[in-house]
Image 1 (cartoon, rainbow, N blue to C red):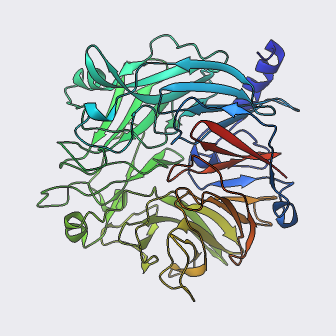
Image 2: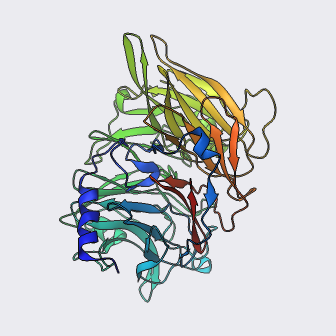
Length: 493
């Protein structure tokens, strides 16, 4: 186990974290690096030339107990001292030395749910699917776990000490029981939790949707549990059946606002919160104001054909056209469309600033955003519709977002990719040497790197075993880490 001195340094490093991915921040406390989910990592040593020399560290040996759908997290604690944390479908949370892969502690928190106990689904067993989040004030890792015990099926939200994996006082919280106390009904048999968790204003937030197969009377939920008073909960629930909050990136947190996308609803005669991008405050009270929601004008057709916009989290995009900076947001649909929104005024039904058929296939993974001069680029996994040639497999596409009086979105480049990972972007200083990294998960199963300006491939690894779809990697000052079934891969540069 690490020394008390090293643990103190680790907690100090967490406490210094303050939101967006700045150059001085090295820990990865949440999905895609920061609460906004832009997937931007600043790694000064990882320029274009260094990216070509990336190589697998075969001496690194971190053995994960179970299948890994959640992204690993990383705590920087000073020179040559850092910790990796994983949470698996076996309901096991582990901490590893980030240098060697040696296990520091392990916590099994209960029996995961076998597929046979669920009305539908495609994960077996079902345990921890959503990426956890780490918190400085409570020195804890928070996550949701699906559990089966003598009393039946449950979703429970846990908080474990980062020091040794012990369960903190007041946790876990049974989701159904907490909602019952405020007069709301939650069915753990039909609800599934696969979104990444977020922390804002003393609460931990998580989203729920249904299982693969859309069985039962499930709804879209966003819940916020108080950190100092774990039993206290605030809740958003979709008005109609469906409306799942299921994207792997979960919520995008900006300032005091929480943005999230919802899936298709069933039997809705009027718009009922599905097929949308919503903005809510920390108490999760939704608004009917057009400023606070967006839905495509053809939301009924999207409902009917299961082509929702809930498969990818919305991401903020800032552009700085001369004399006219714009605060924008991009959302994606399973119909292949990209919607450009004003994030200060989402526009209501049909209220997008621009829309582009960006992909010839479904878009269901978390995108990554990076600056490009006065414009911005958004990279996503999908076959580009406006490409000079067909991309291999599922493809990788980058869009350019321009500002000015009429903000617009267009295709910048396309690249060959066989797989379904969620991309990230590294730069050396926040702007220079942008590199898009993505896993060919459940395809060629390789780690790929592409030049952010042009889409030129500059690196491809050997095949990696055990990569699950939508899996994403993380970038740290000295290494890239990839989570997989049974292990973590470490790449040096």
